[in-house]
Amino acid sequence: MRSPERVLTEDDFKIYNVNGEVFIFDDQHDLDYSQCQVTWINPIFLVNDTGDAIGTAVLELVGTKLLAELMMDYQTPERLSIETKGMPYFPHLIHESVVTEGDAGKYVSEMTIEKLMLSIYPVSDLRIEAL
Image (cartoon, one colour):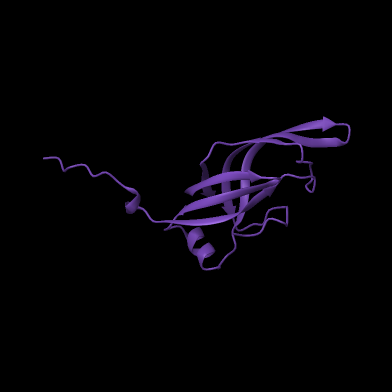
């Protein structure tokens, strides 16, 4: 005899939420992002630096700053480290970009964000802090 199916609810899962800046769209990078059209579909996957899914993120563009609300699986080592202020983890955007040549040089005209990766390695923009 088959056992009855159980429906999983929100109460069956424990998640950890953290917020942070993940990118700044301005001309302070190797390329100018100030004119960039950026697209994504919320929520996006949150992965660790080996590519394993560890949660999701909801992105919001506020002025030139891309903010993220991360919802992480409670059992991941990344969550434990962030919550206890252990090893710092930095947010890295996984994206595809279109670089355009303009009168003032090259700039990024379009960016499509696919995922957000947490890594122990800092991003090139030192204004983005560890979570």
